[in-house]
Image (cartoon, rainbow over all chains, first blue to last red):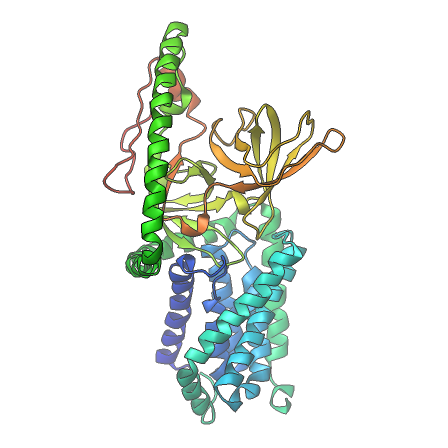
Length: 169
Length: 303
């Protein structure tokens, strides 16, 4: 049975993350690099949701991101975010160890997402980044996301506590 | 891991991957046309009002933080700006004299400056993509005559990029530093092409039949050979001296405009409508730029 309220909250949360990414983090950048809040939303959602739900949500928000705020091919971020959700659901038990573990785990999941975007984008001729530029993104975006994950630790702790009850939508 | 052994997540993951790869392939092969482009435009239309609201909320906060962090350096910057203003005023006086001479000569020859006749539309930047994809979203679109391909400048007249897509109420701009189509430019009397290094803020200039070296600080402007941009628009400057290797010269160029800090842009209706230009023997300037607000619309017909 689908919980309508929770589904609406998820949709609102994902779209809110997209909006924050394209407005706030369009302006606030450190060294030209911004955190990837949408990946972070996918990661946090995967902490609690069922695997299928997490992947469908990740695919949908990736597709919307591609349609709304990307000149790259439609489907690029859908692939990346779905991959993140798939890996995150399978490794979320690692995040049970505390705020630092959550931050490290969120950083690693972000790394998976950014690496997938760069890899698939390069294969499809969407990017032609040098090693230096790609390396900066692979290093800084996960670091920024890990820092934000630490700040959101109380929230993630509550998510994890909730997961010990019923998992998923 | 046992909990995943019998679940449906792996088949679903594979299915979603296949769907996404098929979508990507279709989108890449359709080159921005067809049903997927309609989906893209539709989604952009839906979210651009929310982006406008988001930008209206975020901008004052970001500006306040930026101003507070900059306050220590403001005094030095103020002194430097005063010195620069004095130099600029001296240059301006010289330019005014040259311009008066140019106008007199053009009047004698019956010439007019094409750039003066272009319709310009100011727009606010209301959205940006992530760190990988530097696409900008602006709050003016088809209703203001903004169409795909139109050149986009910053408020200083430096080239930002071109319009990728437009709809009623908004448009997407691809910056030069992300545009794989590149741009035809002139450095001194040499013609070349400027290509982005994606993810980098600098670009690569290639001159195929180069006769002489380029030096640091040499200005790169749009060429009369460019079909996408009016000639003479400043693009950037050479940041590393380079000499021709055989007949080919390659140099690094830093664009003048910083897309990370752009808040408003100017879109030029280019190329001008040839039919309208032919129908009107004495076209009038329809520049609608406003000094009071960065977002004004051209409300006159070019013809």
